[in-house]
Image (cartoon, rainbow over all chains, first blue to last red; front, side, top):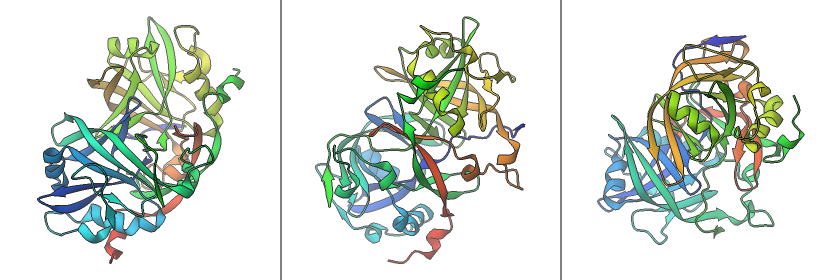
Length: 185
Length: 185
């Protein structure tokens, strides 16, 4: 039986990301899971305007986005709890730099993308950064024989807001864009 | 060792949704997994402008968004494969109506939301519908004792684009906004 629980955003779980930025020469990390995919080549990060990270993103028009594995959960949660306004979080993750300034990437992340900001969709309290990956780095053992990312193996940590938990990815259910051919009412 | 695989959107998996609309009095369903969360109270659906569903959404400024469980995978994939321009898909899911016109909701979905369109963020080939839930319906047995949605129990089907697969949700890893207090370098 369906129960009406009111105006609840029920679109979970979402992949947890760590966003890497640079503000006044200091590297900063934040945990962002209100994210999305825009078209076929862009992503969206919904970030409260008050965040310290937003200062760097607005200025540099660059950032990095990393997925996390279970070993990174404590550190990932920490950079979401403590603001870069109050603490220097630069050394929480070992990082490397790619082609872009202001987009430090996490060395041990299963997947990390250096991204450019192509637009900002603004709402009252949030900036939605519309971003495009310039380079995507994946741990080699998480690619299959065709060079495709195996997201079951990668097993990115997911987030849900109702019970405020991190969840894991399970198994493959089926292929898509084919299993529907078996459909009959 | 990290490998650069180029400009790949690696932000997966994402929850699969079925979007319910009405076009010229005919109910239509489409499978959309390029989605996102905007701020604390809105969601985003990224939908190619050519889709039949978009006609109804533009006109009515309403739609429904349902999560799916594993029993719904074939039907969900089917409504993504076949356009409402060519086939009447009205009877693929049993539906009910809420407060809004043009937003039929799936009776057997684990979770379904009737939504109003608050804005459209347009890119070259896509309309990103920014939507707000008006009512969210959840199968009662998927709520915990506090009335919160249990997303592990709900186990929404997820989508990833690299190997084009539907994936399941796994288990709880930890609470969030607390486990980070244990962090030390």
